[in-house]
Image 1 (spheres, rainbow, N blue to C red):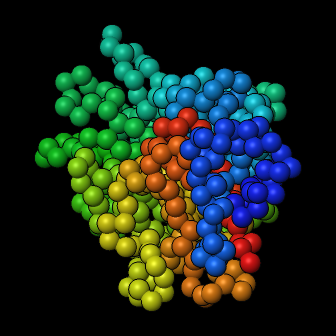
Image 2 (tube, rainbow, N blue to C red):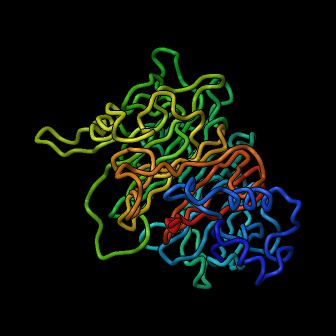
Length: 413
């Protein structure tokens, strides 16, 4: 159900408020009533409003426990991962499937309807058990024939380390490494982001762990992208938290053959990155493939008259945890920040906001970013995941044990 703050009095007359929203004393209800009291002339031309109920039950009917990510697939089912494993729900939140997994953190579906999940798995080498990062690839999860098609292991499936195995004497322990995100390309190749201890010892054969890796649809490592793992720049992968491409539902006959991507970087402890979210162009030249900063988004940030905020605004993000893209033609980019407890929305040009609706008081993008710390309807507590489908934004609100849902509303006339 879609609830619009300005129409709440009518809704509450036709449906019991306790049954619809809970007690009038809870934080969610208080926040919605407060929005409803805003004078109409002061309401934004557009904003994301909550869709209730928020989702709190997993694919097995038990409560979600610290959900880390959410995704709506090409099959229009909702995928989520939490402390217990992989959950599949229909879009109304009804349980459909559950599979226990250890430390699952990220989920996405490719165009074959294969589902990728970043997680961890134990393996024993020379009598020692290692808890290593893996990426699972499943097929048939909703067709009654779930199959584990492949496991990408660190370090064994990194082409630079395929003949290397964890060494207990190595100061750069492989069980301190994590896969943090998967992004799908038009031909079902995938980027996988990885972070971990940085190798600064000279003359070592093991490359730094921070990287964005490219894999074939069959799970073969093709390359590590040429991004700096240690030095902040416009082409870096410092502590990467997620990677995003522009291939997402709805399904279509073909997607443009573009390998461009966006990477979110988590800051070192106690620090803040100048540009924590980077947009990277992948350009084919006579000399081969080149990786270039996205100059369009950089130029947008150089002209404050174009909007009230920008993707390339210095020190914009404190801890960008996850990214999402609206592949329905609106081309909005969403960033959820775990430290700020905030959801950011940007246009395709990197300007903060969404297109101004007809009749709006401005032609500039309307800033619809929101969020503060708490458990209210438009609040978050350590959010770790974000997804988009059919004009709806989904947030894995980790600290509140829920999947929050929001719909862009422009009906404020």
